[in-house]
Length: 70
Image 1: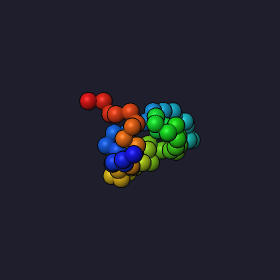
Image 2 (image 1 turned 90 degrees about the vertical axis):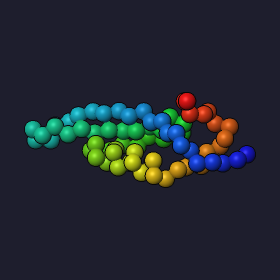
Image 3 (image 1 turned 90 degrees about the horizontal axis):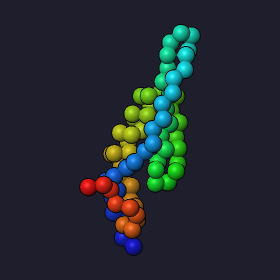
Image 4 (image 1 turned 180 degrees about the vertical axis):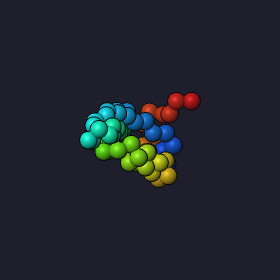
């Protein structure tokens, strides 16, 4: 089996709001659709940083895995 950098990522992103002394705050989670791993983020900025990091560091993947949409 050959590994190659994965150039396609898919996440299910969930958003929900809460109230902090009258100030609305958005929270998020991102679930990797390939592995099922889920990460929670107390603020949207942390979600954005995570997604940006995912695009900067290619991860190796099995070439037999489902291919990205064309």
